Image 1 (cartoon, one colour):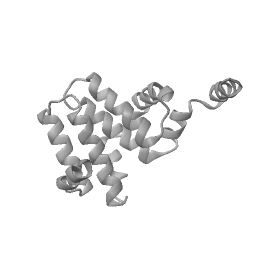
Image 2 (cartoon, rainbow, N blue to C red):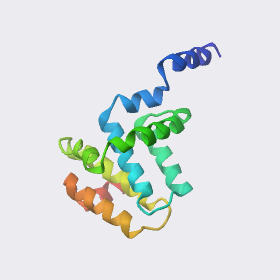
Image 3 (spheres, helix red, strand yellow):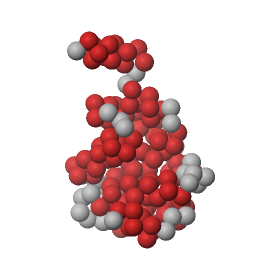
Length: 143
């Protein structure tokens, strides 16, 4: 109980810990922006896509569930400053496995609503090309 109170006071002065984590890591910010672009690629936001996004935030990046709404708000406020090309450029120099992880997360989001729109396929295809990731590697990673 005392720790929760101290965490609350700390976040009042320092901001949300999940938002700080995202704001302090340009590659993480870029990945989350790319995932958001995939969510929006088909023109609608489904509950299943948002559930998948939340799971990825929590499980892959250690963002606390209590911070995810604040992280989404942060991305909405700051994301307009970053184009998709700028976001993806941060990944070009990273190890291939890290690029595969981004591609896998994007594929998870695209498939979350059980229908793949042409716009989602094109975004994923272009991202794989720019990242120099073989689509077969993304499929293997999921198996």
